[in-house]
Image 1 (cartoon, rainbow, N blue to C red):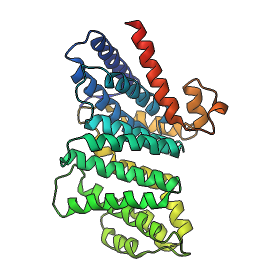
Image 2: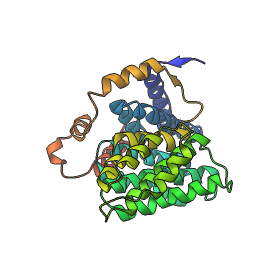
Image 3: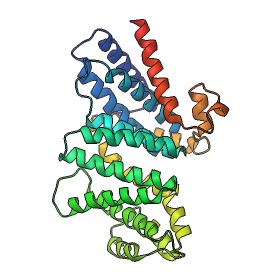
Image 4: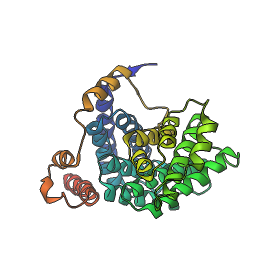
Length: 322
């Protein structure tokens, strides 16, 4: 199977974007299908790029997708307003805001995703899996924002969906390995949350999970071991807030949504980009610069309103060209 460079993948995405904009201008019936293909492609590439710390590249992809999404939302050609790709887009943006430390914006985008989920066809395998992914990312966003009661509510939702899967009550795209990681991460999360008002954190779930998962070799087992060695709330909170926890979580709950038709990016390119990006990660000031906005004017605000306005203004500029 052919593999592509990052530049080739980005070039193809830009070509797809230009074709889509032209179809929308002409009110072509093909625009709807092409719009979905574009959003699905952007979602998949974002998940890959962000996992390899290519944050500027990942955000560029998201920015294009948000612009197109808001443009098409008000376009009568695009009949279906609430669908899985749009839900995943807002989950992804919420996750990215979490990566750069803008927890307020993260929660706002995740709220938009939740509203879209409520409008989607309920009970389907895809919708239920999106609920699990959304709940997991939301739990972490609330935890990082120190809204622990809400974090507990969402991690309990993850646990409920997980239990349905392992009981065989419903089908899921989450693999056995993913379910093992979900079990470990949820156990850690719940033990830490249950003991936030006491000096020592509860280790009941974590010790049981560590015992059950010992031979599975999943990535998250190391987090349980670290917590069981030092079961204070402070240590547990640091583990849940760590980059290691976040990246295992995203690989577990977001990777299953990567579309099979996504071009395969060369592993050497991703690894090389990751090594370079580790010392040059996108932070809030750099994001403001990317959006050509003075950071001092927005440093005490969040990026939610800015990104939405930026994309909507782009729509207005696009409309003036017609």
